[in-house]
Image (tube, rainbow, N blue to C red; front, side):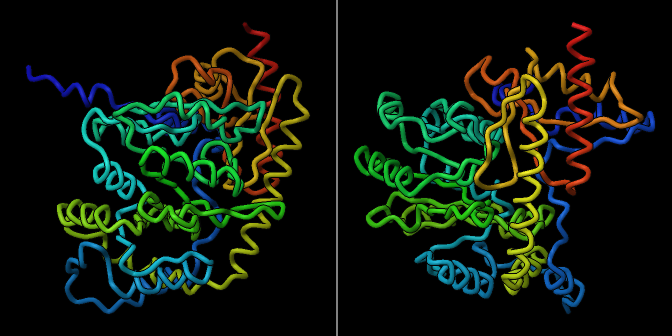
Length: 398
């Protein structure tokens, strides 16, 4: 019998989706499952985007340019410029989701066996993208005790080898909600320039910054133009996860010319999704103001409720819509499965994402979970109360 590839065997399971079969079983039992495990917003997609697809007068569903509709790229550049980012149309290639943009970034800058340094915990799929690209992830650990702030630059320095090609960050962070300060971005800029590396920044949560904090983009750092690669997406900004539209952005012409070759190999991004995404750029600022305020209120409620549970430590996020929590348990994977398989409180339970899958270092984050505050406020309160009850029952049985 033919065997699967070594690469396929190395591909990690998603810590976000691997528990889905257990959630399905819980639902078949008649239990209501509160999904705190995945960043699927319940915020309504802008009507202007949906109407653009409904009203599209298309007789032939043809390929677009491999870099995406020019009209979309022009408008997207203007959008960035209106937010203070010096980005031109030629700096943008539209991709099938931010995931493809990350694959293009890795493929354009690294060879098999090269290394990329990433502060952990990080978005779990980075591990998968690295395996698919034959790239080695070199983690530098941040901790809940510092709310997952940037580790000391000295920690990065000692990890740099001749095979190191880039440092990658998610800002604001998934799964931590940490928002890097200007000083931290400047420190990263200095180290990549010193060692002639790329700085890849996943900035898909840029708009979601709270408490007066501002997002600082790598595209705004003077002198970083040839090193900076920005990844973006419409998924979270416009609550359009299913559109699968993102982009890779850089001033480095060699990077963009190479990324375009990868784009040509997959022909084009999806047409209807580009139509919706281009129309979404007309969304008024009032939409974002309301959404950001809603998420801030949800964050405050979630952190407040979690802090009431004995033994729980939670890092207060400054951005995105996730938080990391340390629970009074030994194995969050076992606990998360037990929540779905063996527990309910009045016919209800919760689904969380075990945090070990957001680390590359083995055995780290075993007692942590990521919680996405993408449910309405009353459901968040109910979810945390179910979690509190579950922890008491689970620990009594140990």
